[in-house]
Image 1 (spheres, rainbow, N blue to C red):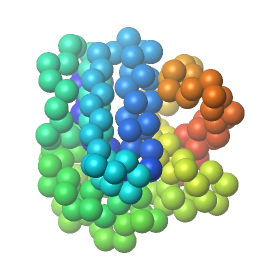
Image 2 (cartoon, helix red, strand yellow):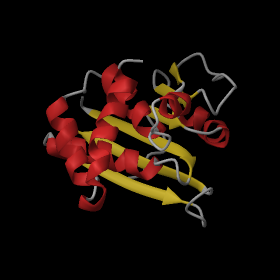
Image 3 (cartoon, rainbow, N blue to C red):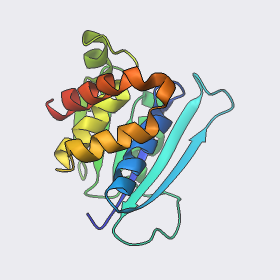
Length: 177
């Protein structure tokens, strides 16, 4: 893997910070060097939220991601704001349920995922974020059940333990789409 820089962006309440934290814990559980830096606007739900994650084989010098290798855009303002910052040859994951426009760049790989639609169809309306993360892990050949279950065990609180299986199902839906 060497070093991969991720930027998750969307509205507050879409699980942006949770997605990043899950990915960071998964890296940690696999003995990688990680950085997780959340950022959100003044109102948590409905305001803008972003999360920078760096996963590396070597120590991470700075948690700032200004040129992501991977961008996850879960709403149009996020795609508009961050599309140009992705490195040439990088990858952009777009929630095509919520974003109708296509990525303008031709020097990146783009995956349009009907994440919110799939989440609603599978009675898990709050897990579109994890469907996209499942797609990312599948595309990067980083989808290991052991690492995923260990990371989910860290980020899902005991109070919400019933959500573990739903998150696992969402990740698998993403991987298979």
